[in-house]
Length: 52
Image (cartoon, rainbow, N blue to C red; front, side, top):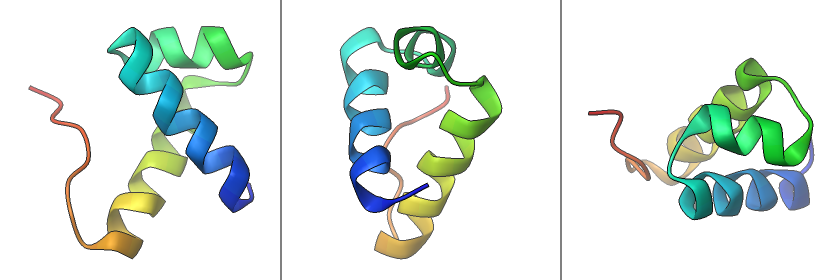
């Protein structure tokens, strides 16, 4: 996935408040949304969303 897609994934997670909702909204798998989120968090060195 490219940088633009990662931004949309993160926006979708923030809007719906859940990875599963974001995956449905983007029509991609939950695993892909999680992977994109994890990659972005690693590249930035911060936690963007708490999974609590």
